Length: 205
Figure 1 (cartoon, rainbow, N blue to C red):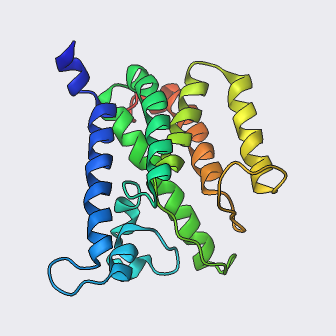
Figure 2: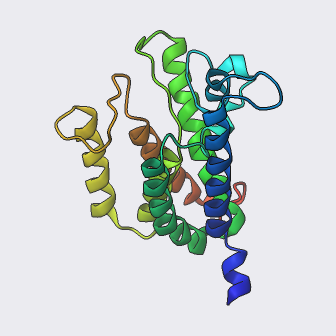
């Protein structure tokens, strides 16, 4: 039982995020590491700014999923991860669940980067954290187990948040809520993975 728990992708991701954030939070307090690297330089590397991500060689696409802006931000995402990830892991398996996690995150950031590249939004936005991927995994799981009503309910909540009718998150996005993008990608991933032709091609079983 203990061996299974410690081999869980959920456990590995939780420990990795805790260690990653504790390390870099301590670095940001000192503002230096390996010489004269400043706090702003580290933040450019650890957070995704769709107007500046190329300055850090594209690393924010990957690192931003681990870095969280505060203790509250990290704890809230870890709680969500501990709820949603095991559900997906039981349905998809360890490797597929991990790949889904990163695919949703990266796809969401690519879509946001395209919007800014096309000058559809000029308001600065800085993104970090795993919530976008977690929302996508939630949508994937709900459709996989045919919880249509709950899936649509969460989608409507995110739409209402986008229109500012309700406020689910502490930040407002004039472009589009990244959580809504991630959730939509999760829905699309679930639909695609259920197609007989794609089942033989995709890793999702």
